[in-house]
Length: 324
Length: 250
Image (tube, rainbow over the protein chains, first blue to last red):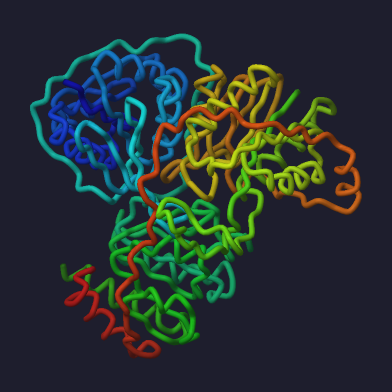
C-alpha cells in the first residue's frame, strides 16, 4: 500500500487553513488508491497544530528548536526522508508562499516532478493526475504523472477544509545544524490583511480610480465585509503606476484568484486581467464605459461613476453584514 | 561572481490562447513571443550584482526552440556577456526535465549564483528554482522582491501571506525573482551593436523524459452571459438584491 502525504503549513504555532483543504484533496486520492493520508508538519511546538490535523490518519510532527525558523533546504531534506519512510506515493501541499518554495525542492530531492496551483486531482489505476490553470488562467492543463512520487501544490479556496480528530501523532526530533537559507525576520504587512489568494471576497480597483488616494473607497468596500473576509486587488496598470504594491496585482503577471465574489471597479478588463479572475464564482463590474470588456465576464454590472456608486455600495454591504 | 540567468521564450502576455488540433498544445501561428516577464527581473538583478562587485560574468541560458536566439540576443544586448541556447522542438513545460538538463549543464559550467524568474508565464509552474537547487545542492530563495549581497551572503525579502519574510541565504544559490525587485533596463542601440559580437553558443538540449505528461489543454468554459443591473448609485439596491437572492453571494 502507498500513502498520500500532505505537508501542513504551521506558522507561529498555528495551522494555516489551506493545509486542511490540501488534506481534502489528499483524502480524494487516498480513497481512490486505498492508502492513508499522512500529514507532515515542521516547526517548533506543534502540539496544537497536530491536534487540528485530526482529519489525517496520522500526523508526523518534525518538532524542535532547530525548526523554529523556516529553512527551505533543511525542511525539504527532513520531509523527503519522511515521505520515503512513510511510503508516499503522492505529496501535496497548499499553493502558498511556503508551498511554492518548499515542495519544488522536496520534489527535486525525490528526483521527481511537481505540478503546482492545482484545482483538481485524480487517481485512476494507481496513476495520479491533476488539472491546473496555465497561461495565467487563459487555459487549463490536465496532466498525468509519469514519475513517482506525484507532487502537487493545491490552490487555496478550491477544496473544502477537512475536519476530524483522533489521528495518531508521531513525533520526530527536528534536526539542527547547517542551513543554507533561513528566515531571519517576518515583517507584518500592517493590520490584519486578508491574503488575496485566500480571501472570500476580492475588491479590485483599476485606472478608473484616477489616483492612489482614491483607492480608499476600494479599501472601505473591502472593510465593509467585516474582518478577515475581503482583500484588495489591483489591475496591472495601477501597480505599474506605483499606486498599489505588486502583491495586490490580479492577472497574468500577478495573482490568479478565484474567490466566491469579485468586484472589478474602474477596471476595463485587459485579457491578462480577465485570465486572472475569471474563475471567481460571482463577478461584479462597475465601470463608466458600458462597452468595457469587463462587462463580458461580469455576472452583474453597474455603468457609472465609481466615486458615486462605491460609497453607496459600501453602505449597503455594511447593512447586510450588520443584519446577518 | 559568475552568474547564470535562466530565460524562457513565452507567448506575449496579451496573446489570446487558441488550442491546437492535437488538444495538447497551443496554436503558435500568429503568436508573438517574448522573454518571460519575470526573467527580465532576473537578468537585471544579475547585471546589478555584476556592477556592484565590479567583476564576474553574466551568462544567459535558455532551453527552447531555435527562435529563442531572439531572446538570447536581447539578453546580450541588455548586458549579458554570453548566451547559451540549448535547442529543443518540444515545449519545455516540464520543469523537472528542464531542471535536470540545466543541472547537467551547470555541473559542467560551475557558477555561484543562478537567477531565474519566479515562474514562466506559459506553464505557470514555479517548479524550476527549487527543483534545480535541490539537484545542485544550492541554497534557494524564491519570489524575492529585494536582494542584497554582503560578504558572500544574500539577504532577500519575499512576500508571504499578509507579511514579508526576510531570508538569509548562502552561496552558491538559486534565487527566483518577482516583480518589484528592480526596473529592468532595455537594450539600447549601443548594446544591440555590441551583442552582435558576443558569443551565443548553440547545441541540442539533452532533455530527459518529462515527469508529467500533458493529457489535454482546454479553454475555460465561457461564463454565462451577465447583465447590467442599472446605472449609477441608484442601481445599488438592485445589485444587492441580485447578490443576495440570485447569486447567494452575500
